[in-house]
Length: 134
Image (cartoon, rainbow, N blue to C red; front, side, top):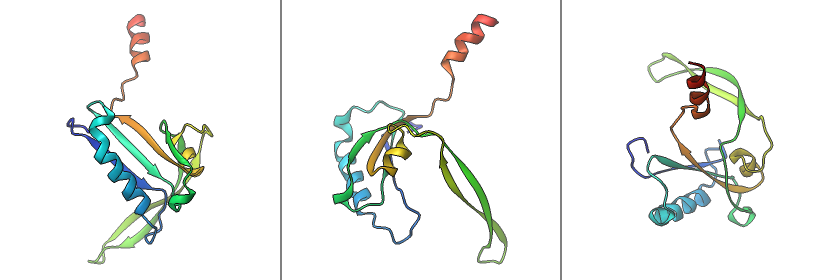
């Protein structure tokens, strides 16, 4: 995406290593097959989050915005194969908002969330404010 190459990120809302990824895989295949006809602009990533549910329990698809939340982080010390310590980030995600149009809320409510994301962090409104002040 950063290089202008069409990009899709697909995640399953589960940390269970034995989770069924088939719905996420079919969703990814569907989007890849139709990507060009969707008209996604260059430098836009489709971030897709799939609930860890059987296909017949998924309520549908929501086009969402990126949700707001905070992680309550913890770190677990582990050893690599050479016996050297490293730290594995763990934590619990806490929602800050409950907007049904937020990706994390949509997934929690049983929907596949598709969020178009750009890597442009400039706050355009503040640029105008600062131009007026300086």
